[in-house]
Length: 201
Image (cartoon, rainbow, N blue to C red; front, side, top):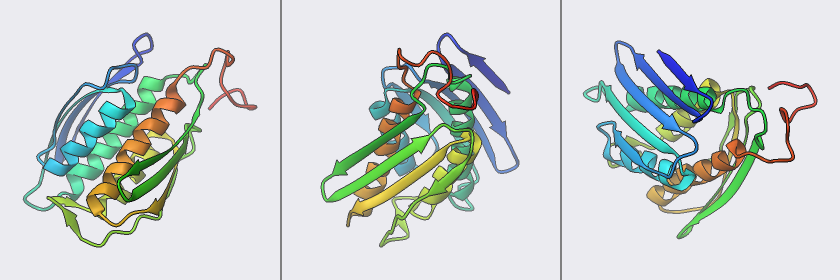
């Protein structure tokens, strides 16, 4: 079920499968408030950081087959979040469309650049030295952002410019994504229609 409000630029998405049951509410023009429960502590921390630093309001409850592993819960949350972003942005009239941010976190430095083009693509070069941070599988960083890029119709790039601590690198990625997305969905008074020579995105 999808609901969309152009006035508030918000969306509510539910997704139920044999592996996960996810309910998510997103408000783009928020204040950074978050209520998140995925059953994966580190993932909750990352999603809270995403909301706080992007100034998005996020409510999320995800129930997944964590007795198997974290894969389905994290990937499906990415699908749902991407759908919510796409619905909340709406027709994209007046928005900057592009966003980028280079975020430092101690020794880690991560660049995120994105384009709300309607064309999904993910490029990233993360390297991790451990398989897990808490109960979060580090290989799921790729799967989470891949799911977002495809369900939101977003061209999404990450460059890991430096980093040694896996927690720092992942958190820098989530925060850089939040800041880049906040820029891309923000309005520019000089843009009266859609920022594209084609006239649509």
